[in-house]
Image (cartoon, rainbow, N blue to C red; front, side):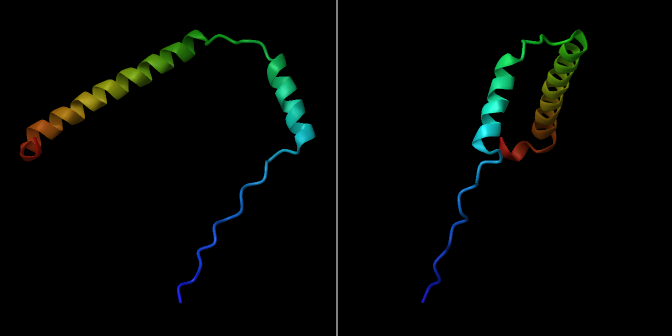
Length: 69
């Protein structure tokens, strides 16, 4: 006979409801903080490096592995 597969129980909330309500209130009180100039530069550099890397990998793929295209 096949054994039954038991699924894990649903996860319990990490915070009790009273503490969760406090957390929600604190998050609502927080003010909007714009990104700092250095954060904007880091985001831009990360996106740029990702796009250049993707282009390089596509070039390598077409140049050295032409059979799959």
